[in-house]
Image (cartoon, rainbow, N blue to C red; front, side, top):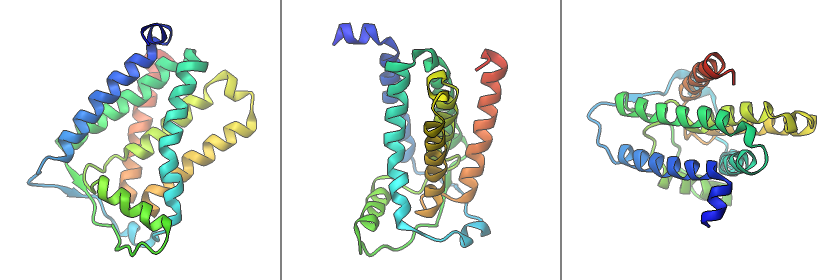
Length: 206
């Protein structure tokens, strides 16, 4: 194990960050904020609930694992860029959650008529409707997509680039389609993505 971590040292930093992030996230999830900004807007009334979008929502986890694995084990030249995008964005999101508590009241009543509704119910039960803006689901999807598309090895395969883009878009859509996030959570996640991408481009030419 020690030799493995020495060979792939970037994996060690990923593990450390993930542990620290989860501790921070759980602390925030268990906070009882006296004031919370509700991110629902009139736009959300026109976005229908669709339990089938739970599939791309869950695929986010696969996307993140495969994305990080690709940079750690295959294209290590992109590790620093990916870590900069994801680590800074996720840390910034936690800071925003702490300073500006947010929540949403969009969740629908489910009857668990099919496996997709059961999956949505499970997500509702393990992930509260607080700490929602900006959406980390959206931010991570966008920035992982950007980082992957910058990889020379991936650029050589047009079909793979297309697949990555489509998956990222579907994941972003899924957050509002299963009512896990409000439309404004997506908007502010994209704003954060633009800011951090610009910093990376200016400071490190990522």
